[in-house]
Image (cartoon, rainbow, N blue to C red):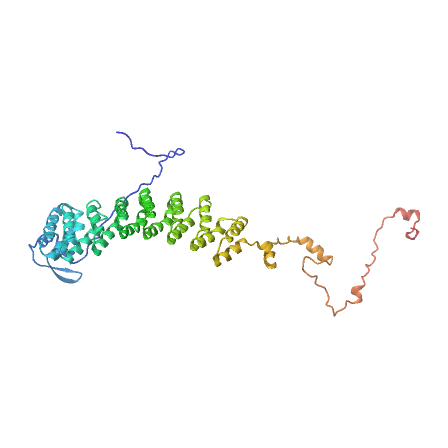
Length: 429
């Protein structure tokens, strides 16, 4: 046997962590009720009608259970006894009593996890039942079964999505939403088929599901977004454009292509969604800068406003000033003219005195030693005034004005100089 290929890092030789898309496993929540207190051996007899009434105590209360409760209790039977439960459920699905059929439809999704033969055929039949309560129960059973049995209800979902009855169509789309989480590839097939419908409402409902499959479906979901952006109905294009900001976080290249197309759309909401997506792109990307500049000259004032707000983030002051001057030549909106004028003004040259002073470099700090020397010499340091020792009214005393003579100190020993030896005096000079 050939060994399975394992991708490894060429430097370390360790296996690479390659992600694999896995569908989310779905479970059907067990229903709670008095039937949980029925003995396992009595569930099938009660469901078949062999036992007419069954008394139980559940949560400190006593209940008289009937065949309907026994049918719902079939959901508790697992393993080798599932065949019995399956047979009892089939009998209940074809019963003449509407209440029995409703109970059987409530138990159908969970019983199908053990054995599903013929159950979905009966589900398809009961969706067109004469009784309204049975049809509602069948629609609910379809919505629950869709994420667990995508292949079993594939054709049923296809038909119910296009039903003229609002409740049936609503339940089918609820099941399709769950299918987007569990089996996105299967859900994409249904959405793809919806985009081919002539009814714009169906295409709109399909477009609203694109956000649910965008991450897990990969390039299949991106193709669906592309097709929806080309739809004739503006509502469909709006729904598809709302996914662009999220797509920008997944694949910037695809999001850039779609955003550029949406930026030229005739609908303003589509263009706004495109701008939001561009904001999420890499600000250092040259293509993103080009799209922002293109949007700043758009005919739509909302698009221009959104793009003009991005200009200070993308460009420096010098480049921004030149762009703002060019945009002011054609801008007509008062608020945008005010913003662009601020961008185009150089405060260091054209601003007020206060604004100009902000651009002046601060004076260098004076070293502490130089400051002490200057103060000792009676000089001011910077703008700081010299603090006089006396106030103006007080005059210094004569003793302070006249310097005191230092007393002459006679040394205990003084060496004889050459002048003393020759007899010269200081007055002779």
